[in-house]
Image (cartoon, rainbow over all chains, first blue to last red; front, side, top):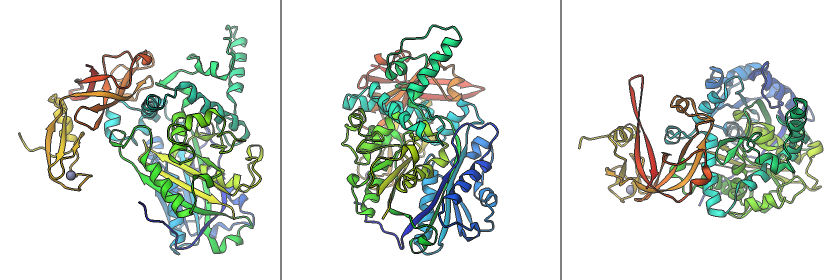
Length: 421
Length: 138
Ligand SMILES: [Zn+2]
């Protein structure tokens, strides 16, 4: 049993920002981070003088591979004009910036720094799909790579094990996709701000225009069942089960709790956080859950003195549709083997009792891997402050939200609970 | 048998010799495939090699149509997918392995739980020899 964790002193989030996510031919990591940084500074209610920032922690998975450029810490501290303040890069595959967030928390909680910028960035779209698949596969364990597993492949295999054990099927995965796409058009930063119905109607119109016979899709599921529009990538993962290739950046301003009110009258506080590490897929306890997520959740709930029932909404790492189902079980929101039923019953929709991925999730918002962790926390922060616009959770008494970030094939998982007091 | 380090290089070398080998902790008897140099159960460091029978059952699988570059070089693509999976060995433990002798274009015909036996796929490219661990229906 994990020891109950606590901070040396409290940490508050007083600003958060992110760039639009997408595939940008004419934009690079620096200008995407600049967009996130401007968005963050604008969000600090009482203003921020960047000269007051003590340090930067930056998550980046593999711009080394994607852009043939490494050592992003100082590039970004120079970009935002805070050199010679220290800049440190963190790497935990797709959880890289959740680790940057944690380092920022530790630095403040220890008393060493008072004001810390944490962020993440990734620029992936200038490589071919196969190259991106290879770049991401660098974060699998060696035996998986050699057996020909890609990331969609690993999660495809997880899905077959889950289906076998709990009797779920492809139709249940479609419910996740349809739900995420319901939220996406409400998020102006999302890469794919469309519902599945929007995409279906657009496809019909384009076929009609080209004089091609239009298939009779009776509903969204019929559309998703059509392998012409939704081809298999790694059975049973189809195109619409997979997050896209993305560029983007995100950042947050963390400060010591006692100075939070200098920045805003509405700080959001860190209530609990946890991180776990996991073994390769072949050596894990089971193929239907992630031990590292369960450990991270236990740590975070213990530190916060909360349970899953206290977390009113969450962003979870839906790199693939099946992943969302597994995470909402691992985090304790729903019982093991029942996550797919909860999605089917609409419990995770924006207006449901436990909204999941109100941002549209990685699936629709995009997944620039190094930027994802803090972009999830950005969504939680935005919802808690009631600034989520059209996608604001209708619950008038939102106080506690959380973000779950997963790196590799479950090798690094984090869970972070934020609260409004 | 010559001394071989309990590592991935030895594991691969054994595969080229058509042997699926694991390491067993001399302290507590736990078996590891692929081999580990340190026991994660009792934290002992004394290991011995054990050869697997090469029998198991399919625990999870996928059929991949968008392959990484090294699999594309072996002729796999959207029209010619391949199956890969996780195999639970008769001795206990699991390995990642290619699954052959099944129809990757008809994944519904592949069943989790099906009994499998080992097969070694030898591959040579530009003078470099490699062996891929595979299983086929028993
Ligand atoms: Zn042992």
